[in-house]
Amino acid sequence: MGRGSGAAPVSPGLALEAAVLALLAAAAALPSPAAGVNVTAVLSAFPNFADFARLLASTPVAGELAGRSSLTLLAVPNANLPQSPSAFAAGAGAGADIADVLRYHVLLEYLSPSDLARLPASGKLVTTLFQTTGRAPSDLGAVNLTAGTNSTVVVRSPAPSPGSNATVLGAVTAVPYNLSVLAVGGLIVPSGFDLAASESRPAPPVNITRVLTDARGFNVAASMLQASGVASEFEADEHGAGITVFVPTDDAFAGLPATDRLQSLPAERKAVVLRFHVLHSYYPLGSLESIVNPVQPTLATEYTEAGRFTLNITRVNGSIAIDTGVVQASITRTVFDQNPVSVFAVSKVLLPKEMFSRGDSDSTTMAPPSAAMAPGNAGNEQTPPTRLSSPPDLHGEDSESSAALTTAKGASWWCIGLMYLQLHLLLSLYLQLQNLNISPMSLLTWKM
Image 1 (spheres, rainbow, N blue to C red):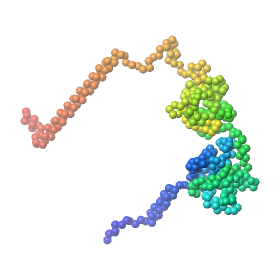
Image 2 (image 1 turned 135 degrees about the vertical axis):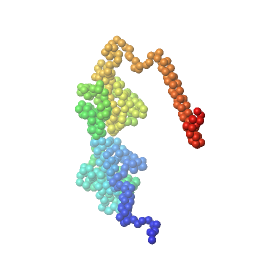
Image 3 (image 1 turned 45 degrees about the horizontal axis):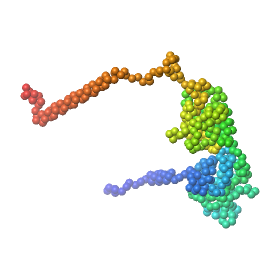
Image 4 (image 1 turned 60 degrees about the horizontal axis):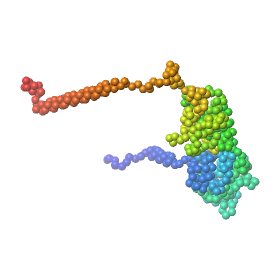
């Protein structure tokens, strides 16, 4: 007898393999627990913590959190943050101190409000991100969570001497088992920190050479600044109004014409060119886009006289153009921008017209001589025509030849069409004779 029409049985091995593949596909679709959470993006939904989110973003802490999970962030509302702006200065010095203070607000454990409600009477010691830096003595990189009166929770340093502490105000938001955000009543400073002293301590100058080295693509500019000693002048001028530095890329140096022998300049003149790339005021990108006075003095102006070595900064076709009188460059990207220093990449080396002007007697490089000044043309100011044209008496002949050619082409097409029609008639006649069983040769004989 034949078998039924049901499906063929599946072997146990194939069924097991299909189940394993299905499980692997489902696991791949789940989010990786190590992917972390963008903390600043989470806080962006809560305007009351905008200052704290901005503080995180201005330090390396936000990036450090991107690869971590199972965290609790102790966020401080805007109204509870210190009002001194120097406390939030980014960079080295004060910036490093405030970054460690922020790390002290990141607990390496996921704590929900229900977890806080179950705290033991002795409290709970929780490690913070600050402990992982190695700068915290002993276990002072941890915080102690203790239950206070009226079901409140207090966060304090485990140091024996009284120190900084803050009360948990409540839960802000949570990404379950990945990130819990709790509001606290103020900044919690690790034991041994003197935040007031760090606020009053001026931040050290930004190392422009190191900024360019870290950014990559600026090897020529970084080496020139280092060799000339001009970089130290930049750092000395950062205080006060700040500085804005336009840095040519390595491609910009490679694209210099052979006539502009920048590298062969004496050291003092090369230093002038480097100073010509610096404005003695801090301008973020937005300020450059809406600059009121387009003609800006440079650091080189201070070493000469007013009105010399200036840059003309304008907006052209949606981008910022910098005109030196010899070349026009554009800003390609922001390399560094932290008050009082901004560094921008530019597409060309800024050559001052006072040194590279074409025809200037003090010019280091000269443009090729014009045709009027070339040897053999002395005293003759006329220049040869740049385009050859036919003599006037040949234009008519050209027109007649073109018309004749057009007529000939038309006659050829008529001949081809007539030949095609004749062939078509002959073929039709042949087919009709075939249908009548008449041979074309017999028809020819009969006609003769």
